[in-house]
Image (cartoon, rainbow, N blue to C red; front, top):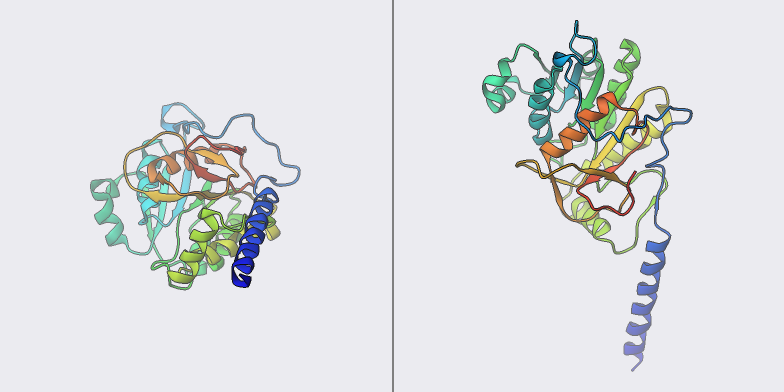
Length: 287
């Protein structure tokens, strides 16, 4: 009788605590933006104007630097950026792998390939010279390797400051938390996060969170955005993603749809200083 009462009391306590934890859950600084920054009225979700079709300065194609060009998102990002009229500088670990994955597109006249390692911080810093925007979709390979981004992103920031580049977009993951964010005890996101970190031994979450804390604490002079897409998959577009502050939930988004939203941020201030999760609508807490 005593053990049954103990189990029942413990269950009620955990249920009440979980309910309270979800009521008190908070998105933290994910939607704050940077102090004193102007926010555009557009929703940040539209297509990026192509400079080859009359948008912007027709005398010079806008240049974006892409770190992580051989990953799933990078291999979707580079072709779309070229299609939309950008000059693309891809910083990749292996030129041969990048060429193999892109095929004939690897020889596009507006594509510049820089072979290097994220651990070479001087090379990372210098790769952004002449850029209009820097986009990082890089991460550790394998995921159990020591995360490179906590060191590489400060080098990107240093390069942006040195060469006058203001726009910086960093892709993290939905399982990352931001300063001040509180999750419910037994949400699917928290349970998945525990499995990824401890059972699978991934360093990606911790690495990304160090990047997020660094940007929030020390980088107030650049127009940065951190994206936190839910689980990514290959395949055709399923429609626009919705930036939101919902807790991380199961479900995958296509690389193509995340890339469409990411490229739109090159020309938009709507999400400067913000860290939205990206998933398909409907969402409960849009930003």
